[in-house]
Length: 464
Image (cartoon, rainbow, N blue to C red; front, side, top):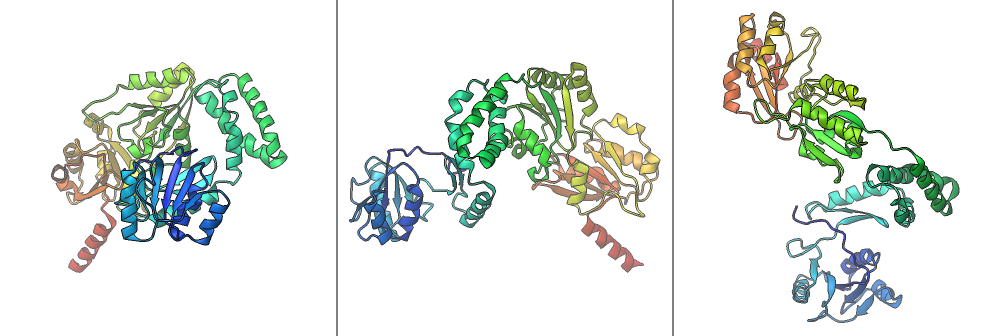
């Protein structure tokens, strides 16, 4: 991030613009929405600019900018549509100590003006570091359509009530009050009784929240999917946003953790195979402790919480402590890996059953139906199977699996950095050693990438 987004208080502060044409007017239409004292220097000024000066909305100085003209200015805009003149006035403004924006010259600007959605006092700023103005405008248009025009009115009236709302304890209780106002009571009152009824509705809403008993804490066991935030369910997004505490796995992507509120407590409960790990008893204790204190806890697990996520142990701990809980399923890594290689996990006339195995503990492999897994057409997804790949290969081939059986390893399934390692059972350990994957890997036994599978079928037909 080169440009750090901030909201600058311009109330009563000086802003200077150099230029009298359409480029300057475009900036002025935005600046005049603020409480700044705006001065424009222009040897030749458009008629609209003169009207604004006559109305007292800005001060127009009908000459070119000179040394000292930008003194005490918080911001300065070079908007002359003339590169030489803009370079001259930008240098003068910098010498006077002002922050300079040279319109349409990103490299020479000390700040940039984002695209803005204005629902004063609610303001949404959209920036692309100057890389994609068209994209910024498209996002702005989308938000303009989504945010109701009355949002600003609700926010202005709510702003005046913030001191009274401090009677509620900080945190979840106060957030629930404002959520009810902005998304339920406020819009309903405005639609049914008009703006004049909003202050009374706020008083009634505050009384209701003050008299309510504190809500009990709870835990939501949420699947974060394979890592791509776009593969989160809508319910998972809402729960993460609402959480007071997020206890997350190591494999949960940073982009997903960014969806949590800034004031939420994030606890890394990461476990790494044969490496650093937080004990399951400690995870259970943290969930119970925070929920018992009234917090909304999200236990955030990669993939689906019900697939090798030790879900039953955590539910057991919550039940024993009398803590309310709910499960929010997610896309499991096997589904993401199959999608990555363009394959279905089940297929008519190939396999009507699908096995999900874990290779984290090779002792568990002894419990499987190896003869069934070794049959032609069998499909299985092996989680955490890289370290046990040689054991897996030996067990399958011992029970009759052909060495040429396709195996596809998918690293970071569903993420932009995903990698596909297509091999066969006979070459599986060597292929994984050569690839040296560092991210989470799913082994798809019996499946090859669709393109490779089609090429193999074509070759077989030619040889026949």
